[in-house]
Length: 543
Ligand code: TEU
Ligand code: CA
Image (cartoon, rainbow, N blue to C red; front, side, top):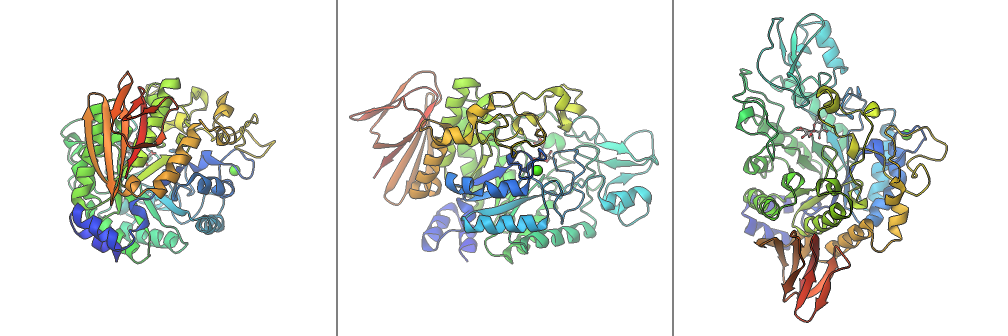
């Protein structure tokens, strides 16, 4: 009942409702994103798997996160890191089987961790039995579940694939079919009711196995303009996502009914949730996907896509608080994921990038809502250099090498300082992507015993976040002064300020209360003020 109350009213009503009854877990959950292929290899074939992940669950509990989201674990054609799914109700044999997933969920639960799966409803693999049947027979019911057009010289419209090139390819018999991503990822036609019916079965299949919900891939897609008309403009990677230039391809109003249906299904399973990947430029539009009867959350990618700039960060925080506040949904904060260069590298690399990533982590973990931590960000991993010969990302290939692709944030996790960094058992096959040399310096085993490591900072921050309601579930106010961004978080009698110095010199913060946590050891507190060096952040508590 708490959710209904929480969702119904204004942001103010919501806080009243939360105080009346314990809030649903997902409103403030710290969710750890596991890139399964690169997390931990249990059986020594060089590929991360469910057994490996299961063996590392105690690490996640020790770290202090609340839930994990696992990137696609399904049998896949392997064209896009698992996002080309062949069978939605199975586990890729490389990763284990359905029993392993059930065991993972059970172990996780015992450790107080929830498991969220990835689901990919916009497109299937070209090897999916539906697409195979559609290729074999243009008049089959399966053909109606995709977007086919009869043979002709030109593709049906001007749409472009997000991975480069036209969004239309030809079948062996000359028909066109639509793929907004790789040609191996044909788009489903959600105007065919058989598609929705099948996904309902998929959701129930996994919910019946105890998972706590789904991260929904390309949730802004699914429906296309009914007439498949030309887009008014071509896609330019605008700062925050797609806009009106792509009006025919994305964000069709019909898609919201799908989320209402999925929400109704989740409502039958207590304590489950949906988080949507909605890559639209307009955050107000993104938030509409998390109205009270739709998905519980939709990612706010503003901070992920902001440069190290005070105004951009302040706007990233404030606009998300405003947009999601208006619909009564928590903000899901994202600083890193499997599609984007690592923070340390984005923010300048080396010691500078690391200092900034540490400071950004304190900002994100202070904010009210549900932060997502991408595996390896808690180790301060930089973007890895992956040699072209071993790259896997279709973005690299389809751009003819012009775009580096996403492999550099998908290399194996370093667990210890042995030569193989403990990703696989000893004497195993080579890992599927090479471990960069020197990666052992980031290993969990080293950082866990280093009081100054990024890992120790995350662990302390998560423990404090759990202990202080102002952190993660307060009312937040944002203000900037020159290059200093301050977020004041209030819960009951407690106030915690997160002060982030994005400028190039030390600043003095007045009437600070006391330092709860700082992103650097170079913070100095004296009577009445705190000296905060460039590229650092601090949590200050007043009570
Ligand atoms: O990404 C969807 C998406 O919109 C992409 O444009 C994303 O922003 C891009 O990869 C950034 O470079 C999702 C998944 O997160 C991604 O890994 C998949 O490749 C994609 O869907 C297709 O399923
Ligand atoms: Ca393996």
